Image (tube, rainbow, N blue to C red; front, side, top):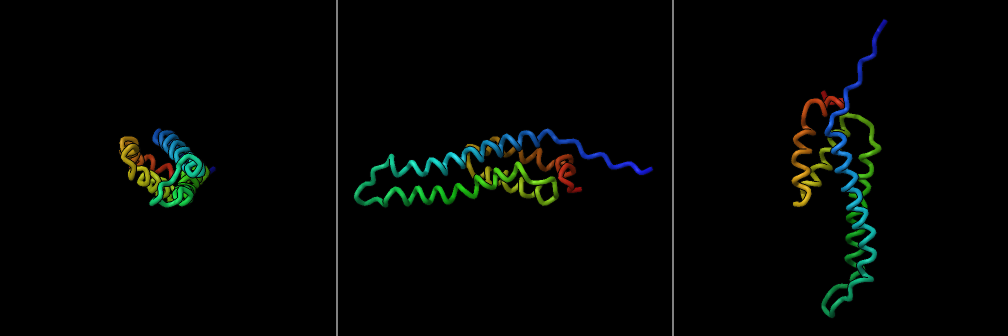
Length: 121
């Protein structure tokens, strides 16, 4: 009689990562939807470009990032998904306000139990 291998235990960093991904997705969604209010709130000067250009720029930049962070909740546990998540942690490290959260998250993300959870032996 063969026994099935026991699935790896969920590492504690996974819950913290989900909080990070949720807050990042909320931030990018707020930027995306808030960018449409920008032309209504700003009166351009004579030598300034029209505000709708900035609204379009912010909306187009924030939409893919919001989608990437939202997708993080629905991806399966596969070795390539571990890399996907580590890239999203790296994206957060480009912001000075996220670095204090991303550095410990990255340290714990690189631990063997997290790798094992995603099948990266």
